[in-house]
Image (cartoon, rainbow, N blue to C red):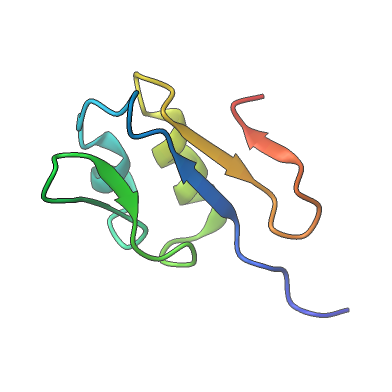
Length: 77
């Protein structure tokens, strides 16, 4: 069996309020850009569990995480 594909991480920039929780939780995956919005800098930057915790910490529910292999929604569920 091959390696798992990276998670597909989507940030709704209209919902993002730059709370910075995602970056604080998963700093190798998320960053805050020049427009003060979260963005994905590396979908494989942190362990899957850490990335999911970063998404779950977003009070705006601006981050959607999909399984890279199946496309199943992992967060929000």
